[in-house]
Amino acid sequence: MAVAAETTPRWSRRRRLSWASVRRGSVPYVLLAPVAAVLAAILGYPIYSLVRLSLQHYTLFELIAHKGQYIGLKNFGSVLHDQIFWHTLVRTIVFTIVNVGLSVVGGTLIALLLVRVSGWVRILLTSGLVLVWSMPQVVAVQVWNWMTNFQNGVVNYVLTELHLGNYYGHDFTQSTTSALGLVTTLIVWGALPFIAITLYAALSQVPAELVEAAEIDGARPWRVFLDVTLPILRPVLLILTSLSILWDFGVFTQPYLLIRQVHIHPSNYLMGIYLFEEGYLKSDYGRGAAISILMLFIVAALAFVYVRRMVRIGEAE
Amino acid sequence: MRTKAVRQLGWNTVGIALFVVMVFPVYWMVSTAFKTDDQINGLTPTWFPFHPTLKHFSDAIHTPFFWTDVKNSIIVVLVTVAVAIVLSFLAAVALAKYRFTGRKLFIFLIIGIQMLPGAGLIIPLYVVLARYHEVGKLSGVIITYLTFALPFCVWTLRGFIVGIPSDLEEAAMVDGSTRLGAFVRILLPLVAPGLVATSVFAFITSWNEYIFARILLNDQNTQTVTVWLSYFLGTSRNQDWGALMAGSTLTAIPVIIFFLLVQRRIMFGLTAGAVKG
Image 1 (spheres, each protein chain N blue to C red):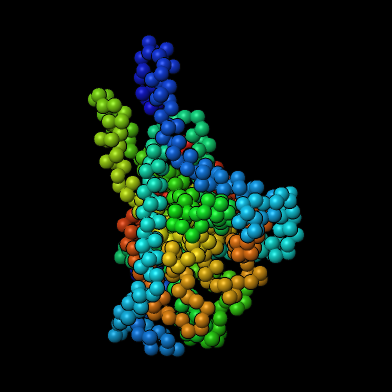
Image 2 (cartoon, rainbow over the protein chains, first blue to last red):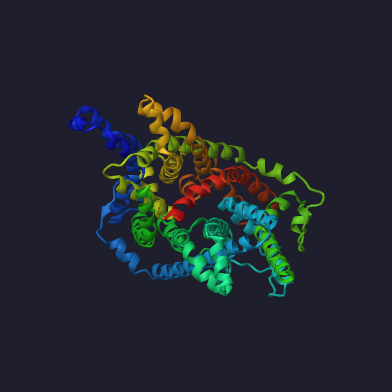
């Protein structure tokens, strides 16, 4: 388009404001209009309602009557004075740090391993990783439920046989730490393939000569990694870390289905679960809306770095 | 030279061990689905399903509502993908081929929306859809799926269209084609693989979706497969693990096949930006 404009002869400049050029200028807007209209209706409007809901007393009764009662910031006050909210927030932050840390460090190690193994092992391992990556979340949860069930879970069996403790009849969902530990295992297992394969693709951009030169100069492997490999991986690592933070902070399906309704308790709530229990299950939509807004603000703050970077890429292309 | 070979052997061993650990849950799912009840319920695990049985698969597909829910999932996914692909293709062309005021804002919204956690949206979507009597209906679920499918398709398709050299299109225009003609004859065939890959990926994400379907569909007649699978495990102490694993395998198979087909193409879509930036 830009090229076309430049090659337009000078004498036609004045005609650029003609009806034809206005029509041509409006082409991108016409193309965007359908998506913009649909998103405004199915997302813009609900988000507007979210803000209104958060300022209303809105329960099942109001839902049926289609009319909420304005109560100002009382919902926010109630949430912010709720001990469970603060405990859940801290727990979710710790949970996110642990999960992101394990997935990103683990993924990096696997990517580095993929560079070092023989060709056939690389193909084998990559296929295995892609297979794990493709597992639907709900399916993965059910498989882990089965593998760790307290009656005859295979994980319990292996841990006991390895003399790591007696896990016969052990229910992982009983204590908060082991319940969330189990969720972490499931999430990290599911996240490793995406991170490892993406980083491996980025690693193949590291010039081999650069690494060899550094090795000939007597640099130790650790220094080669820090000074040569890491700077090249940095942009990818940044994006993967941001994405993982966002995903893990807002996680719902895995803890909800793995800990299961029986054992879900304020002492093991994560943010997504807290919101679901308080807003949806208790049908207190006004309060739920206030929690959603607080959660979305936290996520927006976390997403800032990632979104800014991606927008820049989108603009440049 | 010998230390190098030893080191290679070491790395390979670690690689194979890692493969075994990572793939084990998938293996355990499939192998359990073929085991007999005695093998499944035994206190010591049976590592390989000698005497495989298809009983659990038949149990799973004969559970009430299995086929209804499969049908529901297929309807929801096909409508979502069809609507999302057609609408977002237009928007993706606008983003990839035109410079215009408001472009940056639109890109910002498309990326920002994808970052919103589903859990944070359940309350407003539920209340608004309840107001329009869309709770409990597949159409309501399709609306919620479009909230993530549309932005994803716009962004991914944009990546595929950007990758097509505009020289080709311009050459066609110099030869006397109109912009639309150039578009249909040159751009569309080139972008077709991208369209397929994006559709398949949108298919997978919608098929796997759980939380929106869980809050909107409470009637077993109108559930999706993921909700069906999540309710499979009740609260009772005696679980039918064999049938659960057979059901899980059946739910996962279409996803795994599709995913293996498009993973390489989509990888480019997901990471090209990152590597370039």
